[in-house]
Image (cartoon, rainbow, N blue to C red; front, side, top):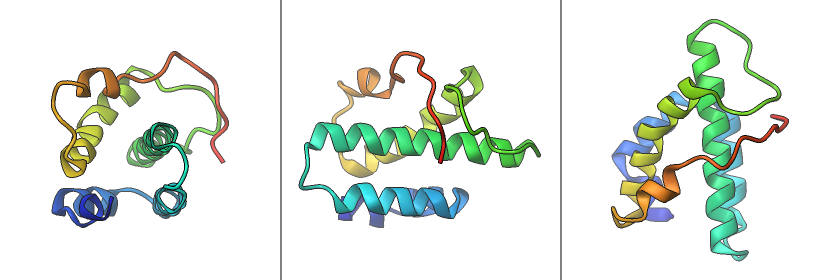
Length: 110
C-alpha cells in the first residue's frame, strides 16, 4: 500500500477527490491487519463513493446520500480503479472480475 500511495498517478488522482476519501482511505489502510480481501473490498467501495461525490460536484448537484451506482458512476469508476490496480501491482488477469461492482445494493453514504 505504501508503494501505491506514493505512485504519481495515485497522488494525482487523490488530488481530484475530497477530504472524506482521504480519511476513508487512511482508515481502511490503517486496519490492514484484518482480512486482506475484506479490506480490499472496503477500499474499492470507499473509492466508488468518492467518485460518485466527485461526479456530483462536477455536475453541480449535491452528492448522493443513498442508493447504488448508476451506469455513469460505473463508467467513471473504471479508470480510477485501473490507476489503483496499476499502483498496487495487481496482475492484469483478475482485474476484469475485481473491477466489476457488486450486485446493485442500496447504501448510505456517510
